[in-house]
Image 1 (tube, one colour):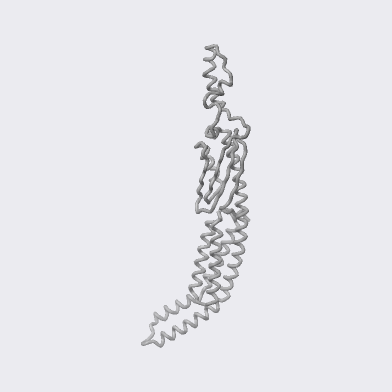
Image 2 (image 1 turned 90 degrees about the horizontal axis):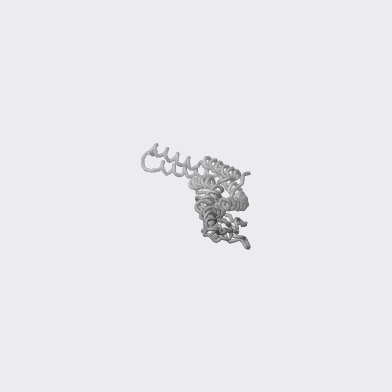
Length: 292
């Protein structure tokens, strides 16, 4: 049985990366499409796009909020821009020799940009980006696990509803002969009205009325289609994966067949069963709104 994912979930994680404590939180709710909302004030354009692409590759549907926060690590030294140190040294060392001055490391550390004091500078560092994306993948894994647990719960709930739907549709099927007899009695009454009317009965009208009553007397085709759609629903539910849209379409077909069956007969027994059947279909619809 394949894994079924709910669209709702939450996960978080944190670790020290490049002198910062990086925290990531993710929350998702159901949505027709995949919408990603990223709150990462310190991100470079490159890193923000990488975060979006990583989340997009892992999800299919839902509104997903991602929060990324950076705080200087307690007791941690500010990250050093080694490339900039080398550039300053290459420019200043010859000048220091020419002027007979001593150039020391502490002199270079005071120059602008050597110490990456800002989170914006840190997020542009390749090693920092790699560490953050690794943390993001860990959070996504925990996020997927939570959504899978919720998906398993939804599958169990829907399995119970499907069993109830099966019982009701078979109860309706057990009334097929009653439906035929009811329609036959109605046709006999209608035929008597047509034959006792003024003038000769119109043969075309008789045929039209007979065809109408015969069509209303037979619900076997609708029952067969309903059972077929019901089995399709079970199969898709068992297969797992991104099943939400498929299940919604099948549910529309189930509802259509249920409406057709109810429109063909006014038997009180079937009407009562039909009300319960449509209520169960609506319960299924509510559940699949949370399926990816």
